[in-house]
Length: 210
Ligand SMILES: Nc1ncnc2c1ncn2[C@@H]1O[C@H](COP(=O)(O)OP(=O)(O)OP(=O)(O)O)[C@@H](O)[C@H]1O
Ligand SMILES: [Mg+2]
Image (cartoon, rainbow, N blue to C red; front, side, top):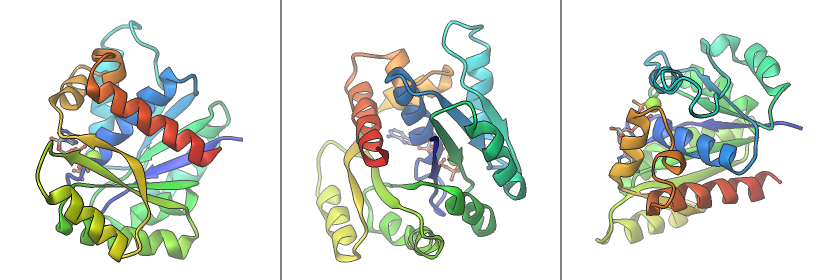
């Protein structure tokens, strides 16, 4: 039975597309069949797919489609027939679009940077997932190597009763650089700390979804 993971966060630039790409490629490395759907009119995920296709078969292709939010349910039925996991990217500031994706999701993954502003901004997505009855986890992204911000963000999440994954991503150029090349970090820098973080995230997600 295939599962749908929707990456959502109303705040722009929290890392939705970055986390989705890194998770997708790490899941694929772990042997899962993965398809991607972009519901964001900014089409950043489509840009990554085009860079990947330009590599001419040097890396495994990932099935991809871009759809308007209203067509998502139909597209999901089609996409999930052949894979284990479908990952759906969503736009910022688009409540109606995101709601459709959240409704269809077995897991809603909400990237937050370690700042109270990001944690507060996730509230809308959290309430949406609660209304739709979807499982949700926050995911700390772009965590700096030192400083108080991590502890403060974690305290804010605990205080607000927001469930979070144990894994997290550091603020790492390797994540950015791999995407520029149409790759995930597990492919571009397989021995890096960033790749280890991507694999840890994939393992936690696989355990969560069973
Ligand atoms: N872990 C990270 N380390 C370093 N840079 C990161 C990391 N995560 C995201 N970024 C950078 O932050 C910026 C925003 O990331 P991204 O585009 O993935 O966010 P988004 O939530 O998809 O944005 P939007 O809301 O516009 O769709 C990008 O420039 C990306 O390269
Ligand atoms: Mg994005």
